[in-house]
Image (cartoon, rainbow, N blue to C red; front, side):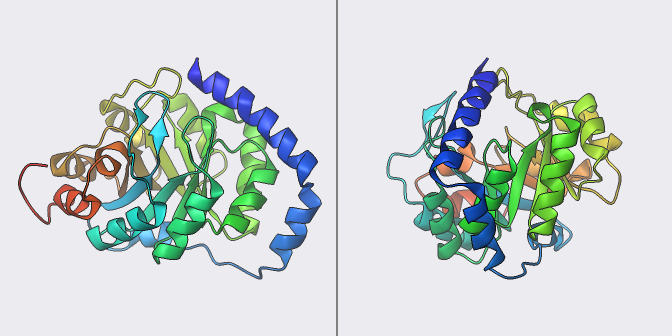
Amino acid sequence: MILDTIVRHKKREIKLLKAARPMRHLVDQVSRLGRKNPVFKKALAMGSGISVIAEIKRRSPSKGVLRKNFDAGAIARGYARGGAKALSVLTDRKFFGGSGEDLRKAKAASRLPVLRKDFILDEYQVYESRLMGADAVLLIASILSPSKLRKLAALAKKLGLDCLVEVHSAGELKKALRIKPGIVGINNRDLRTFRVDMGMTEKIVHRVPSNVLVVSESGIQNHEDLIYLRSLGVRAALVGESLVRQKDVTKALRRLLGKIRGTR
């Protein structure tokens, strides 16, 4: 399965990174950055409507190349003009074509808070994320043990980063809620098969406590989808492929938000 392949590769990648640049160097560099206040959840919670986290990624294992003329900074500026409340940037290189440089460019090009979207397995990557300029990290419940999930979330909090804890089932949600997360992402895509079921959010959102901000991820195509998700109590939607494929991402995002009408 693709997720298992990704995780195996990521473990090897982390081992090589640690050999080339020991974690003590990252810890030292982060200590020089000073205190950081978490801003990602706060940005999503502003206003009464549904917030959009607009995603920046070159390709995916299931769809291949999503955007040939790829400029992370230009895309970030386009999303900001379109009304995004935050950005999500893929930093996995092998499977998604991303990099830390993409995140840095996106961050520099807009004032929006940025989620580092990657397969975070180790404390090393959390320190990396802080050095990249990320405001939040993705923690995928299905690939982390309960103790590792807790440790990574605690470190992120210590470094001033929010965590988006991603789940795809009631069982994974139960696991996630044990660490009392501020944000839970319900992924409508099964990462083991890459199949999308937009009903997944509806199936488990009622199990999330009211003080936890819910993000629905994957499969969101149009304004009607946002209306449907908001009716379920969802506060934010993470949207990637349906936006990044468009030539004019600003116009595409405004259309998604219902600010303009018409065909794509």
